[in-house]
Length: 157
Length: 178
Image (cartoon, rainbow over all chains, first blue to last red; front, side, top):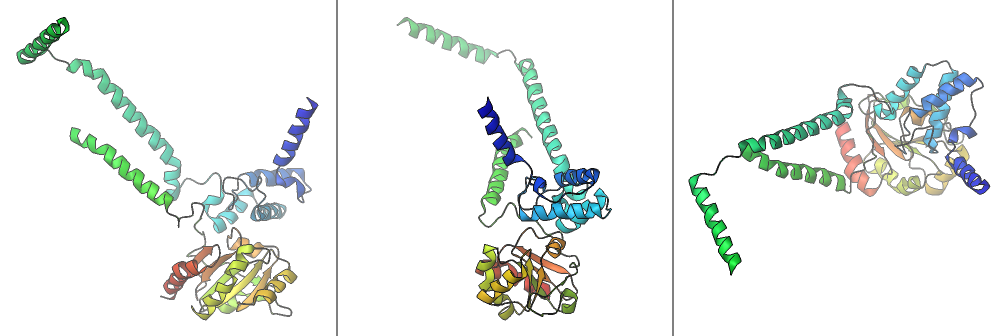
């Protein structure tokens, strides 16, 4: 048990965000704001991480910058705008809903609706299938009987 | 109408081929980001000069001229690789290159230039990296073209190599000169 805990502790150390080792804001409330904000800013080098999670140089620099601006009394939105002006909407993990991001926001739902439509049509058609079955015409009836007869004689030999 | 349904698989395969063709293109970098700055006014640059006793580096002093701004650092390996080709930007393409040492100790940047040669028309030290962030750089090296009106025309994220020099920088410079 103890060994398991030790292993977990070591793993946890590895996961602990790089934030811990940096100069923090004296006011815990502001520090919390800085941390929350750095969690929604994307690291531009390691693109699936937030700057809070990343160890990249630029991410560290952005964390410092976020703290500085918060200390200077800027609002969260001011800081977001500052970063978007330099790095584009890409820097936000929660990009704004506007013309250039419509595909991003609506795309997945459009695919879902389209796929749902295909499924509905498919099953509808299947349900109609028996209704379209019809009686054999005399020609066909004759062929069926002939084939059945042949089958019977072959089976006999 | 029913016949058209049979064309659907062909259409889907064609779309997939197009998507894979794009995805497998060796020249495409999926993590490349468009610069938010291209087409906009370049951020102000006002930095201490890098060389001993050099005047401050001010972008405003280059107004009216097409310039390249190159962010580098002595600790950056690709910067070492691109170094010989930076001279060509000035000598062959006729665009003065401004060098900004990003998040680097001034002594280290000076030693870097003393060792490899100084291809820059002017240099500045951006020790806290803030000017780099103003330009939206994601790392070093990065090179920007700023035209005479102070508008950012182009950004190269990554080293200047013979390939990017011919294939990217030269056409971008020609375009910016129009």
